[in-house]
Length: 600
Ligand SMILES: Nc1ncnc2c1ncn2[C@@H]1O[C@H](COP(=O)(O)OP(=O)(O)OP(=O)(O)O)[C@@H](O)[C@H]1O
Ligand SMILES: [Mg+2]
Image 1 (cartoon, rainbow, N blue to C red):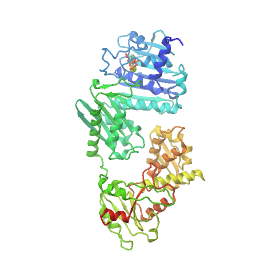
Image 2 (cartoon, rainbow, N blue to C red):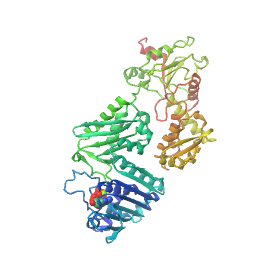
Image 3 (spheres, helix red, strand yellow):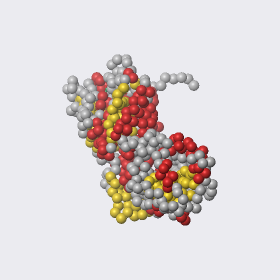
Image 4 (cartoon, rainbow, N blue to C red):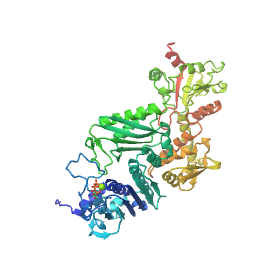
């Protein structure tokens, strides 16, 4: 086939596909242009998830007639005045956004520059440029995009439901609003109740609180560190404010919102001592450095960056977060103990029998601080339970007389609860330590799964429906899945724009922290799409439910409750591992213990 030069229109369409992927990318480009133009106030309006209409107006410096005419051409920009691609101080620099948008839909730019007698307007419809016409506008620039992607139907096919697109738009505006508390933003449209973030010059936490919620404001610690010209500042949520996904991590480099693996990795490393792997902190971090030290021109949507000295930036973030957490955050009570456990590990024997008991590598944190207490609790069965008096805050032990009839069961009789997290049980020939939360989570999952296969999950009606206030996007997500949640035993309905009424909860959960449950469920649902199999969804739901049911970690259990959990574990298949594949219990035979103490 002969080689042929593509037409200008074709070239523009291909470029458009890279720059504008979905309505949210258009909104991002237009808001960034407004910020670059020095706007103090930016109004965003969308309709049909941005597919039908996007309008972004600003009060920035505007464009002259001549600039307007050039601005919609490819590679035309006012932002690169030298040929130094390494020294970029603006959000835009390629001169690609407006022509790309004009190639994909119907673009109208109306603008008023102080040096012009009146405003001017230009239209680009599927790449067809109109003449510049006089127009009416008091100040700044208003950009309107209608019927996005009508000229590139292939792209149109990849769009999600209007609701999802509207949510992506909201996310983009939120990110930019976080980076610029000195600018007022409004976001309106048919698909949402209007949001206004008034300018709060100099008050970063104020703006973050408005965008991320008052919980964040109350539970955030200030981050500030500087090394070799790189500064990291911002606010990080306490570990207790963790979420089920990493969508609550907002990172900015020189004011530009980015999704950078290096930065995410640094955050994970910093919180590793405080959060389990499946929980993620909420935070907003702002990295500021000499523009020459970072390449922003590595991704078509500019959402990734490359640092010249990545190690320095990563190290600084980890250090800044760890420092702040150690200073202000609650230290996790669990540290070290690895040496003791490596002695345990080879000795632990897997249980044989009817269920799927896995060989269980012990989890070090549980044991190290309290060997004396455990040893004491494992006296002969007839002996009175060891009384440890008032539990100390860091090593709480509640122990009691074992029920004699339970001692011959595979998981034995509960003798103590330590750290309000682990159940210590005595068997005929050894001891068992159960992670009550992990075990409960597994039981809930297995029970729900078999209930769904049979008669459905039993629900209990709440005497008074519980009203839970949530973020509007969370409400939308949850109510859109109300039917599915009902199958999982949770009956909810909308209650005004920012709240959900919970009417029924799954009976197996007992008492539920409904608010926490809904918030985390909304986090999970944000990541679902229709290809996710039912089993995975159920896993999310049951794991989340177990977190907010009555047996969760950190709750003191009654002896009967502990024994009931042990008996449940014996009855439920696969309960030797939690939903994340970790063991739910560790067993030590007396022989193992004797070996530990050098008696054998
Ligand atoms: N809201 C606005 N107010 C004033 N001038 C604007 C506005 N939007 C665009 N412009 C002008 O139009 C030019 C082209 O905008 P466009 O977004 O296409 O490219 P850019 O911002 O320079 O680079 P990038 O493609 O990286 O966004 C800008 O350089 C700027 O001079
Ligand atoms: Mg731009």
